[in-house]
Image (cartoon, rainbow, N blue to C red):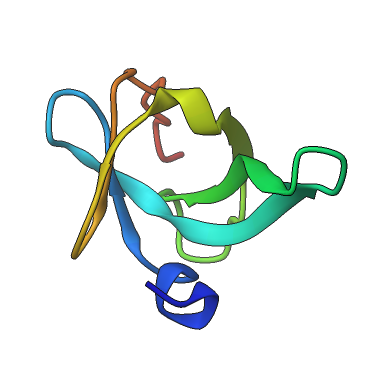
Length: 77
């Protein structure tokens, strides 16, 4: 998968609930690998809250990214 295909991919938590999409990646030049992903959370129309998730918390990558953790749910005002 190319980076441009990865960016914008839907993210599901461990309960298969769509929590957001990939917004950015954090690259560790010493390791030569990505160590975190930045997820734009699904919330209000104009809200762009993000959360960083460690690469170790990714269970699978395919048409979407599946996490092995549950992210807190945001309540819309």
